[in-house]
Length: 96
Ligand SMILES: [Zn+2]
Image: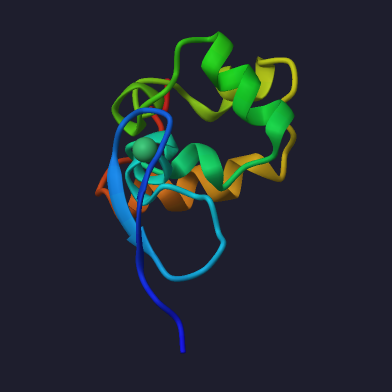
């Protein structure tokens, strides 16, 4: 039988967990990128986009595929994933 214990994370969020898992669900949710598209691609590609200030799908949609491919760290495999993420929000890369 597992008992639910009240835990408080280092940021002060209160949550109940029955396991020994120390992960706070509030912090976990906050750590995830809002759109989630950055979690779909590899770490180097993610850093390339973050360094270029492209942290949202809206910003990504203002770029062309060519522009994105020019970024150091972006591989060709990242493009289809980004395209899918844009499509899911009814967005797309610019054609210019
Ligand atoms: Zn927390």
